[in-house]
Image 1 (cartoon, rainbow, N blue to C red):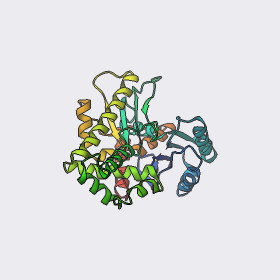
Image 2: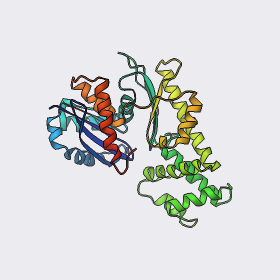
Image 3: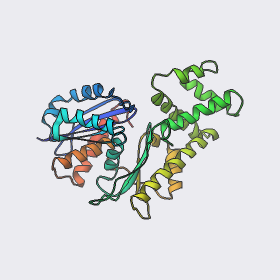
Image 4: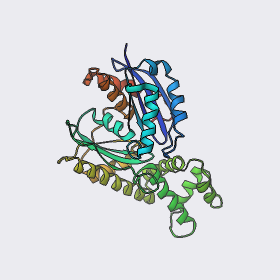
Amino acid sequence: MGLVIGLDGGGSKTHLAVCDRAGHVTGFHAASGFAPNLSDEWIAPFEALLAREAGAVAGCEAAVFGLPFHGEDAAHSASQIAVVERLLGARGLVQNDVRIAFDGAFAGGPGALILAGTGSMAWASLSRPGDAQVRVGGWGHAIGDEGSAFWIGLEALNLVSRALDGRAEADRFRDTVLAAIGADPETFNAWVYGVENERKSFAAVAMIVATLAEAGDAFAQDILTRAADHLALQVTTAWRLAGGQAPLEWSYAGGVFRSEFVLKRLQERLRSAPRAPKLPPIGGALLRAAQNAGWTVDDEWISTLAASLTEQLNIQPNKG
């Protein structure tokens, strides 16, 4: 029976999956994220992850790998393509990780996806032959990624610093964040500048903010409201540039949307409810791979794949 491989390589976590012609997942692996730092440090963990499915890699009909920074930096993109070609030849295709999330959400249909995980980006297309694939945002944590988990965490840590020196009266917020990260007023600065992985550690603070917001903390709600504003601007801009007309067809992906507060605020800004993603990002990679292999991909196949992936993701300790 034929097999295809998909990979979703995000900033915080990576999923690798293998599925058969019926849409059943036959192999699934979770690993740490590939640090999108424009270096070649991602290659060794990438190859080690593929080695877990060496048989499938050798015999698969097609594979699609969603990798950070693909299409954003020419040298880094060329390196990604070269590694995949070395391992799989013409059977392998590299895509931006947000592109495969878009493919999963709409399963080949038109729409605009807002992804907010460690980073953030919107992707939109009318999905007809010749239509542009439009991307907005995704400029990285140094100058962009507004509304992402990293951005939320950075805003929270900035507020803690202001509360510590008296510029903000946010004592409850300050104390809750300090306790959650295991710091106090004397060690806070050392924690901020001493974390091994700044993007991952700061992004983790977003969940603390989400919990505070649900409990009614006004400072946390303000941060998440501004995050929703940024995400709304990204997705509406992408839809407009793709040539989309009202009503906006949108969906979402990424860990930030585990916060019901963010999702509710985003719906208010966009004045419409989202389409539930048909497939998670890893499903988008498998879908593209199946199409590239020439398989018949219909609604039944997509539903089978969605159910199989849901089962796999639900048993992962760091799902989402």
